[in-house]
Amino acid sequence: MNKNDGFIVVQRPLASGEARNNPRYRGIDRLIPWSMEHYSKGFDDPYLSPEYATDEGLIRSALLAQKVLLIFTEIVEPADLEILYVRKATPNKESTPPALPEYRFVGFDVAADSSPFYSLVSDFPPTSEISFQTFREQFNENGLFDEMEVARDYLEAYLERYPEDRDKGIIVWEIYRLEQV
Image (cartoon, rainbow, N blue to C red; front, side, top):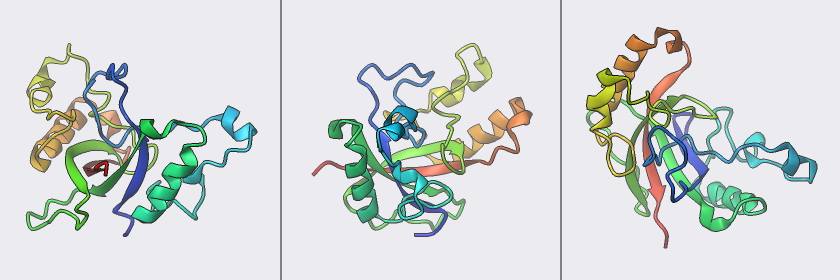
C-alpha cells in the first residue's frame, strides 16, 4: 500500500438513505465521527493513531482494517460498519482492479484527497442545479459513478460552477466494498 490507496472503516448507510442529497450514496464520506463524549470515556479513535492510519486517513492493510473495525465496535454496532478499499483513480486505461477477491467494485466517488474525505457526490448539488441533472442520472445503485471518465467530467463541471473549491484537493476515488462472508 502507498499513499494512493488503503482501507477505511465506515458506517453503513441507514435504511432511510440518511439525509443526503444522494440517498443511495455508499462512497468514501462515511467515516465514524470523532466524539468528545467517547474520547472522555477512554475511547481512542484509531484514525488518530499512526499505528493504524496514514496522514491521509487511510488504513495501511486489510488486517489493520479488521482491527480498526473491532475497535469501533466499542462505540458502534458491528452490523453498522463496513470496510472499504479505496484508491485514487488514475487515468491510465491499463489500470487493473486490486487483487482482493473478497472486495466488490462499488463505483467512483469525487471527494477530498484525505480524511474526512468530504464528497461532492454525497452532498450532490441540489436538484435545483439543472446543469448537473445528466450526472445525477448516471449514478449507479450505490449512488456513485460506474465510469472514471464520468466522475472526472463531473469534477470538472463542479469546479467550473464552484471555482472556490479548486484548491480543496478534490479527486476521483475508486471504491471497493468488503463482501460479507
